[in-house]
Length: 358
Image 1 (cartoon, rainbow, N blue to C red):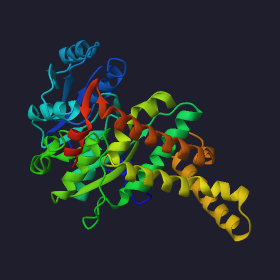
Image 2 (cartoon, one colour; image 1 turned 120 degrees about the vertical axis):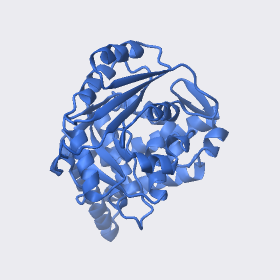
Image 3 (tube, rainbow, N blue to C red; image 1 turned 120 degrees about the horizontal axis):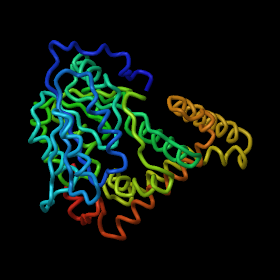
Image 4 (cartoon, one colour; image 1 turned 90 degrees about the horizontal axis):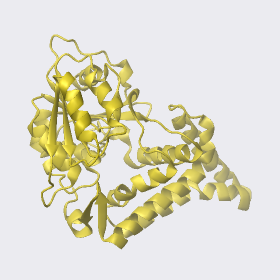
């Protein structure tokens, strides 16, 4: 992870030769978080950009908020979607609708609750061009509050890092890929050639899979650390964290119960059993368990140090692992029990989701 570039170290692109850029997001019932986030996305020092907001069948004040911003911002375009065609998830459908109305040479896919620093677009384009990347994902800063929320989210982030090895994304010989919903910059030509969100029309983890199809199409992909330059309040409270990942985690296991069970057993073996070994083992077994437990705490604490939370949260490592296992088990059980996934108040049958996996 230390080898990943930091966005703050990239020299912002010059205004004179800046390519046109389109920021696209889908919003469904985002009235609470949308105004503050959209204000930052419209307050960029990038010389040539547009923001395309797609209202995806919202039932709250989201359409009115978007229209209010549109009246005072000439570079904001609002698209209203009233229906969802068969064979589509709502978010990919909305992002395709936004893309079809965009003009940018570069596209940024983000979410309606993500906050941008004023120079994030200039630095992101400069970083992508410097490394000759066609696709750039940024690790954002996740605002976390309270013991249980920090414990759950910090371990989730650690699991993401170990499971996906983001430092290998830029290696064309590696099959590793990353796509982060908070901020993905992709060259228009690469997006069109790989099929974009049309290929992801029934894939729940469409953000990660965009990184996959771009790389599989032969384009160069990279990952950088944005930290506070891209910020999001992901979920409020541990209960909402658990509910929020219900649709995602079993999907990440390809809707395969055996795969999910294996992931849970591996998590327990790596992150929980060493701490039991400290108490119940003896001799060399206890010594090796101690080494594993201390390493886990230090690595976890080191990752938390990059946030506003205390590195002492590394001590919550086994507790976070148990929460992670519960989130994965709950996602698998709920999906199998319902026979599908509920996302944005729409039910999608499991058979269709499995067929739509990329």
